[in-house]
Amino acid sequence: MLTLMHDVVVIGAGLSGLRVAIELVDACDVAVVTKVHPLRSHSVAAQGGINAAFGPSDTWQAHAFDTVKGSDYLADQDVVELLAKDGPRAVIENERWGTAFSRTEDGRIAQRPFGGAGFPRTCYAADRTGHNLLHTTFEQATRKGVKFYNEWFATSLVKSGSGVCGLTALEIPSGEVHPISAKAVVIATGGYGRIYARSTNALINTGDGCALALDVGVPLKDMEFVQFHPTTLYGSNILISEAARGEGGLLFNSKDERFMKNYAPSAMELAPRDVVARAIQTEINEGRGFENAYVHLDIRHLGKDRIAERLPGIREISIHFADVDPVDRPIPIQPGQHYSMGGVDCDKNGTTVLKGLYSLGEAACMSVHGANRLGGNSLLETLVFGRIVGVAVKDYLKTTGRVEKSNLGGGLRRTTERMQALLSKGTGQSPSVIRSELCSMMNQYVGIFRDSQGLSIALNMIKSLQERSRKMTAGCTDSRFNYALIRALELQNMLQLAEVTAVSALAREESRGAHSRTDFPKRDDQRFLKHTVVTKTKGRLVVGYKPVNLGMFQVKEREY
Ligand SMILES: Cc1cc2nc3c(=O)[nH]c(=O)nc-3n(C[C@H](O)[C@H](O)[C@H](O)COP(=O)(O)OP(=O)(O)OC[C@H]3O[C@@H](n4cnc5c(N)ncnc54)[C@H](O)[C@@H]3O)c2cc1C
Image (cartoon, rainbow, N blue to C red):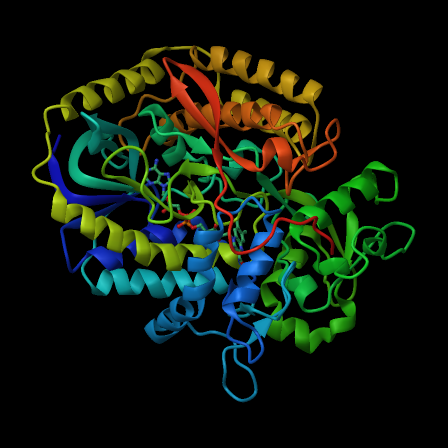
C-alpha cells in the first residue's frame, strides 16, 4: 500500500476531469484518478456536437433563452448565463488545441440545427465530436504533465471535520487499496444512465461519484430528471444522434404518418428531447409503432454523399447493429435513457457543502440543464465549467493549509471491509442478476411516463434488491484485475442512485421537462418551481427543496 499525496485529486478523466486538470496543473500538484483509460471515458462517444452562439445573427442571450426554455424553467439562470457567454471562447480554445471541426465552404466551423435551438448553433466534427474533443483535450493534459492513475477505482471520500481530506482508491491491476490525501477533491465521474436497461451510456456510467458524495453527507439534486433520447437503435439502444434530425431526418409511425405534427407542430422533429421522446413512446403505446416497439427515422432523402460526409458513424452503426443501411431503408428507433440532469448538488463554481469538495460535468447538478437538457449543451458544460471550477479550486487552495491525514486510515479500513464482504462469501447473490432486475425495473416504473403507484412499486423493489445485495458475492477472489469485484462495487452505487431517483420522482407531484407524471400531467410552478435535494442522514434518505435562480427570463408555458 502506498500513501499518496496531492494538492488536488480529480476523480474522472472525461472531458470535465481533463479540463479541470489542465486549468490546475501549472498552479499545483494535481492528479487524475480514473477507472478506465481516459480515452475510454463516455465523452468519447458523443456524436452530434457542441453548442456555441457564433452565427451572425445568433447571440449568447438567444442561446441562454433556448436553454432556459428547454429546461422547463428549472435551470439556474445565472449558471446558464455563464455557459452561453463563454461558449464561443471554450470552443475556439479547443479548436486551437487541435480539434478538427467540420467546416463551411468559406472555412468557418460548421454548425447544424439541434432540438429546441432557435439557430443552427451546434458545432460538430462529422458525427464523432466527442471523439475529437476528448483526444485533443487528453493530448493537452498529457503535454502539460498531468499525473494520471489509470484503472484506479475511487471507493470512498474521506472527511476531516467539515472538509474533505482525501479519498481511497482501488488499484485495479494489483487489487490494492490506497489512501490518497488531498486538499481538494473534484468529482467528475459522469452520469449514472446504466441504472436503466435501455441506455445509450457506456457500461461504466454507474454514477460512482454521486454515490460517494451522498455517503459523506453531500446532497444530490434533481435526480428525478432523467433524459430519454428519442432516437436510439432498436435492439441495442446505441445512440442515433440528434444530428440525424438536425440534418433533416424525419420520423414516421407504422401508418406512414409524420406524427410529430400532432405534438410539436412548429418545431416538428426538432422539438426538445423530452417532447420527441414522449411523442414516440405515445405512438408505440397506442399501437402505431412497428412490432409494438419502435418507429422509423428516415434519412434516405439526404442522399448517400451527404450521409457519408455528415453522418458516417450513424450509417456504420445502423449497418453493423441493425443490418439496415440508412441510405436505402429507414432506421428502427425507440427512446432510451441518455443523460442524467441530476447529480451532486453544487453551485456555479462547482462548490459543494463539504469544504474542498467540488463537482462538475454530468456527475454534477449546477443546475444548467434544469428539467431537460438541450443536445449539444453537455459537451459545452464540461469545457466551460472545467475552466471555471479549476479557477475556483486554485482560489480555495490559497486559503487552505495542510490537510489532516489521520482520518484516511478509517476510510481505508471501511473500504477494505466492504471489499472483503464481497470477496469472502463462497456463495451468495449474483451481482449480474440483481443488476439486470434493477435495470429492467427502472425502465418499467421510473421511465418516460411515471405515476405514484409505479414509483412506489419501484421503491419497494429497490429496497428488496438492496437487501439481497447485502448477501452478494463477487464470485471471483483474484486480486489482480478483479472486474467481478468492480461490477459488484458499482452495483452498490447504482442501487443507491436508483433509490434517490425514485424517491425524488415520487415526491415531485407535477410534470416538468423529462419528468412526466401521468397522475399529475401539468407543470405546477406554485408548488414545484424548485430544486429537489436529497440527503442521506443516518442511512435514510431525506427529501428537501431549494429555490431556482431566476432573473433573466420570465417563467412561461413552453410551446414548440
Ligand atoms: C452516446 C452519447 C452521445 C452523446 N452526444 C453528445 C453530444 O453530441 N453533445 C453533447 O453536448 N453531449 C453529448 N452527450 C453527453 C456528453 O457526452 C456527456 O454528458 C459528457 O461527455 C460527460 O463528460 P464527463 O467528463 O462529465 O463524464 P465522462 O466522460 O462520462 O467521464 C467520467 C469519468 O469518470 C471516471 N470514473 C467514474 N467512476 C469512477 C470511479 N469510481 N473511480 C475512478 N474513476 C471513475 C471514468 O473513468 C471517466 O473517466 C452524449 C452522451 C452519450 C452517452
